[in-house]
Image 1: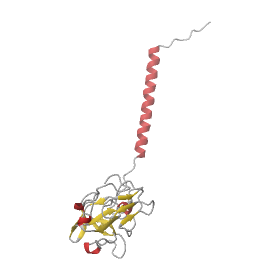
Image 2 (image 1 turned 60 degrees about the vertical axis):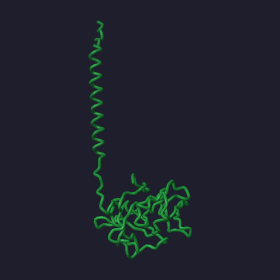
Image 3 (image 1 turned 90 degrees about the horizontal axis):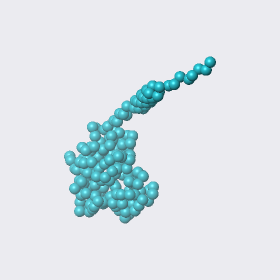
Image 4 (image 1 turned 90 degrees about the vertical axis):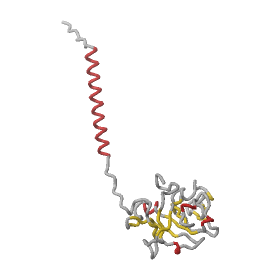
Length: 204
Protein backbone atom coordinates (compact mmCIF):
# COMPACT_ATOMS: atom_id res chain seq x y z
CA UNK A 1 0.00 0.00 0.00
CA UNK A 2 1.35 3.38 -0.91
CA UNK A 3 1.03 6.15 1.67
CA UNK A 4 0.55 9.59 0.19
CA UNK A 5 2.53 12.43 1.81
CA UNK A 6 0.28 14.90 3.51
CA UNK A 7 0.26 18.22 1.73
CA UNK A 8 1.09 21.21 3.97
CA UNK A 9 -1.14 24.24 3.89
CA UNK A 10 1.05 27.15 2.63
CA UNK A 11 -0.82 29.61 4.83
CA UNK A 12 -0.09 27.56 7.98
CA UNK A 13 3.60 27.29 7.02
CA UNK A 14 3.76 31.06 6.56
CA UNK A 15 2.20 31.67 9.96
CA UNK A 16 4.64 29.31 11.65
CA UNK A 17 7.56 31.03 9.98
CA UNK A 18 6.36 34.51 10.96
CA UNK A 19 5.68 33.38 14.54
CA UNK A 20 9.11 31.82 14.83
CA UNK A 21 10.79 34.88 13.35
CA UNK A 22 9.01 37.21 15.74
CA UNK A 23 9.90 35.02 18.70
CA UNK A 24 13.52 35.02 17.62
CA UNK A 25 13.60 38.79 17.18
CA UNK A 26 12.02 39.29 20.59
CA UNK A 27 14.61 37.02 22.15
CA UNK A 28 17.46 38.89 20.49
CA UNK A 29 15.94 42.19 21.60
CA UNK A 30 15.71 41.02 25.22
CA UNK A 31 19.31 39.80 25.17
CA UNK A 32 20.48 43.12 23.68
CA UNK A 33 18.53 45.09 26.30
CA UNK A 34 20.01 42.98 29.08
CA UNK A 35 23.48 43.54 27.63
CA UNK A 36 22.94 47.30 27.55
CA UNK A 37 21.72 47.30 31.13
CA UNK A 38 24.64 45.16 32.17
CA UNK A 39 27.04 47.56 30.48
CA UNK A 40 25.74 50.58 32.32
CA UNK A 41 27.98 51.76 35.10
CA UNK A 42 27.42 54.47 37.67
CA UNK A 43 29.06 57.78 36.74
CA UNK A 44 32.26 58.08 38.81
CA UNK A 45 31.93 60.63 41.57
CA UNK A 46 33.98 63.71 40.76
CA UNK A 47 35.31 65.56 43.77
CA UNK A 48 35.91 69.29 43.84
CA UNK A 49 39.64 68.56 43.53
CA UNK A 50 39.05 66.75 40.23
CA UNK A 51 36.66 69.23 38.61
CA UNK A 52 37.70 71.53 35.77
CA UNK A 53 38.14 75.21 36.53
CA UNK A 54 34.92 77.07 37.33
CA UNK A 55 33.91 80.73 37.28
CA UNK A 56 34.57 82.19 40.72
CA UNK A 57 37.62 80.03 41.43
CA UNK A 58 40.65 81.76 42.95
CA UNK A 59 44.08 81.19 41.37
CA UNK A 60 46.60 79.79 43.85
CA UNK A 61 50.24 78.76 43.69
CA UNK A 62 50.59 75.29 42.21
CA UNK A 63 53.92 74.52 43.82
CA UNK A 64 56.63 75.72 46.18
CA UNK A 65 56.38 77.01 49.73
CA UNK A 66 53.26 79.05 48.87
CA UNK A 67 51.40 76.14 47.26
CA UNK A 68 47.67 76.55 47.76
CA UNK A 69 47.91 80.26 48.64
CA UNK A 70 46.35 82.94 46.40
CA UNK A 71 48.63 84.80 43.99
CA UNK A 72 48.50 88.60 44.18
CA UNK A 73 49.42 91.20 41.55
CA UNK A 74 52.61 92.13 43.41
CA UNK A 75 53.83 88.53 43.15
CA UNK A 76 54.34 88.92 39.42
CA UNK A 77 57.16 90.76 37.70
CA UNK A 78 56.24 92.83 34.65
CA UNK A 79 57.57 91.09 31.52
CA UNK A 80 58.99 88.46 33.86
CA UNK A 81 58.52 84.70 34.14
CA UNK A 82 55.12 83.12 34.53
CA UNK A 83 53.77 81.63 37.74
CA UNK A 84 52.07 78.24 37.55
CA UNK A 85 48.73 78.22 39.34
CA UNK A 86 45.72 76.00 39.97
CA UNK A 87 42.13 77.09 40.46
CA UNK A 88 40.73 76.78 43.97
CA UNK A 89 37.00 76.46 44.59
CA UNK A 90 34.95 75.46 47.64
CA UNK A 91 38.20 75.71 49.65
CA UNK A 92 39.69 72.88 47.54
CA UNK A 93 42.56 73.17 45.06
CA UNK A 94 41.52 71.52 41.79
CA UNK A 95 44.72 69.55 41.28
CA UNK A 96 43.79 65.86 41.37
CA UNK A 97 43.08 63.37 38.62
CA UNK A 98 42.61 64.96 35.21
CA UNK A 99 42.37 68.31 36.94
CA UNK A 100 46.08 68.10 37.70
CA UNK A 101 46.78 68.61 33.99
CA UNK A 102 43.84 70.46 32.41
CA UNK A 103 43.78 72.95 35.30
CA UNK A 104 47.48 73.82 35.03
CA UNK A 105 47.49 77.55 34.29
CA UNK A 106 50.24 80.11 33.78
CA UNK A 107 49.81 83.79 34.60
CA UNK A 108 52.04 86.54 33.24
CA UNK A 109 52.23 90.28 33.78
CA UNK A 110 52.45 92.85 30.98
CA UNK A 111 51.39 96.41 30.34
CA UNK A 112 47.77 96.24 29.20
CA UNK A 113 48.72 97.96 25.95
CA UNK A 114 51.17 95.12 25.19
CA UNK A 115 48.46 92.44 25.09
CA UNK A 116 47.74 91.67 21.44
CA UNK A 117 45.35 89.48 19.44
CA UNK A 118 44.29 86.75 19.56
CA UNK A 119 44.44 87.39 23.33
CA UNK A 120 41.67 89.61 24.66
CA UNK A 121 42.90 92.50 26.88
CA UNK A 122 39.43 92.80 28.43
CA UNK A 123 39.78 89.22 29.73
CA UNK A 124 42.95 90.11 31.67
CA UNK A 125 43.32 91.63 35.11
CA UNK A 126 44.78 94.95 33.92
CA UNK A 127 47.44 93.25 31.82
CA UNK A 128 47.88 90.14 33.95
CA UNK A 129 46.95 87.31 31.62
CA UNK A 130 46.16 83.63 32.21
CA UNK A 131 46.91 80.93 29.62
CA UNK A 132 46.58 77.16 29.71
CA UNK A 133 49.96 75.64 30.37
CA UNK A 134 49.21 72.79 27.94
CA UNK A 135 50.41 72.92 24.35
CA UNK A 136 47.41 72.46 22.01
CA UNK A 137 49.42 69.97 19.95
CA UNK A 138 49.68 66.98 22.31
CA UNK A 139 49.32 68.46 25.77
CA UNK A 140 52.93 68.90 26.87
CA UNK A 141 53.60 71.58 29.47
CA UNK A 142 54.97 74.80 28.01
CA UNK A 143 58.32 75.89 29.40
CA UNK A 144 59.39 79.21 30.89
CA UNK A 145 59.88 82.17 28.56
CA UNK A 146 63.04 82.22 26.54
CA UNK A 147 65.28 85.26 25.96
CA UNK A 148 63.00 86.25 23.07
CA UNK A 149 60.01 86.45 25.41
CA UNK A 150 58.30 83.48 23.74
CA UNK A 151 57.02 80.30 25.35
CA UNK A 152 58.48 77.06 23.93
CA UNK A 153 57.05 73.55 24.09
CA UNK A 154 59.80 71.00 24.85
CA UNK A 155 58.14 68.03 23.12
CA UNK A 156 57.85 68.93 19.45
CA UNK A 157 59.26 72.43 19.10
CA UNK A 158 56.12 74.55 19.07
CA UNK A 159 56.53 78.12 20.24
CA UNK A 160 54.02 80.72 21.43
CA UNK A 161 54.04 84.48 21.81
CA UNK A 162 53.95 85.34 25.51
CA UNK A 163 51.82 88.47 25.10
CA UNK A 164 49.12 86.98 22.88
CA UNK A 165 49.36 83.20 23.15
CA UNK A 166 49.62 83.11 19.36
CA UNK A 167 51.37 80.07 17.88
CA UNK A 168 54.61 81.15 16.22
CA UNK A 169 56.12 77.77 15.37
CA UNK A 170 54.23 74.58 14.43
CA UNK A 171 53.22 71.79 14.91
CA UNK A 172 50.78 73.32 17.42
CA UNK A 173 47.56 73.88 15.43
CA UNK A 174 46.55 77.01 17.34
CA UNK A 175 47.56 79.33 20.16
CA UNK A 176 47.38 78.90 23.91
CA UNK A 177 43.84 79.09 25.32
CA UNK A 178 43.20 82.17 27.46
CA UNK A 179 41.26 82.08 30.72
CA UNK A 180 39.38 85.28 31.65
CA UNK A 181 40.36 86.57 35.09
CA UNK A 182 39.75 89.64 37.25
CA UNK A 183 41.33 91.13 40.35
CA UNK A 184 39.13 90.88 43.43
CA UNK A 185 40.26 91.42 47.03
CA UNK A 186 43.87 91.48 45.81
CA UNK A 187 43.63 88.01 44.31
CA UNK A 188 42.86 86.63 40.86
CA UNK A 189 39.39 85.22 40.30
CA UNK A 190 38.21 83.29 37.24
CA UNK A 191 35.63 85.50 35.51
CA UNK A 192 34.66 83.41 32.49
CA UNK A 193 35.05 80.15 30.60
CA UNK A 194 38.12 79.28 28.55
CA UNK A 195 38.09 81.32 25.35
CA UNK A 196 39.39 78.33 23.39
CA UNK A 197 39.36 74.58 23.98
CA UNK A 198 42.05 73.30 26.35
CA UNK A 199 43.90 70.17 25.28
CA UNK A 200 42.26 67.10 26.82
CA UNK A 201 38.82 68.64 27.23
CA UNK A 202 35.72 68.36 25.08
CA UNK A 203 34.76 71.99 25.17
CA UNK A 204 36.05 75.28 26.46
